[in-house]
Length: 239
Image 1 (tube, one colour):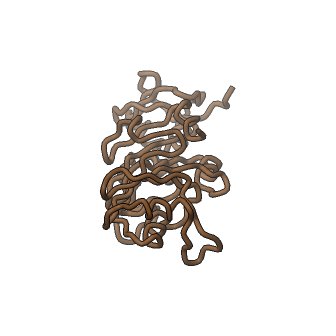
Image 2: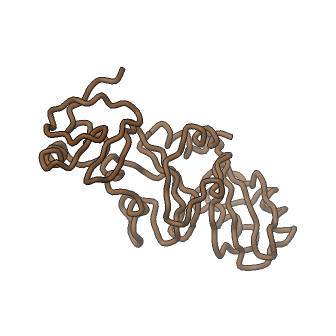
């Protein structure tokens, strides 16, 4: 059984501020556990997964770690310290930033689609490191018409600057006159855009539609919306 925590530590673990700030929340009557207002931050709580509580009347469940899927819109940077655009964490509740939730890998500010976020370092490493070969499916809109020759080049491999060997798509297929789908495993910097340029075309728009066996369509998220991932969905990431 998990070790009991005083309520201020419990709230701090969930990202609701410093211990002092969490104590103030309790003192102000803003916290309930299992539907009952807690009157002392010294009260001990056993941190069981799924334990319901509220802060400022908003419902939450205790999660030792969070795993999130976001349908990223254009115009946001996947960085804690963005340089030119707002951070993608602005799309999530503020307490996620307090508990150090981070993007799993990066999508360019103008790339849309499926983005994972978590505060689990091992999960972030397993999903983002190239050696784990997690396939990612993208739909690219090209500036010039897609041709069979372009698809063939991407499947055969193209040489990128600063890469020791050519990089090839795991899968690539034309969708219509200007769009193609491409599956990559390496996760190199600006990889889809650079591969299209090296193959003689140009990327006008890009969206990530799947990671492993988890698809954006199945998550049913509008742009800017997020959801927690279930245990079953986490397993799909390995497929």
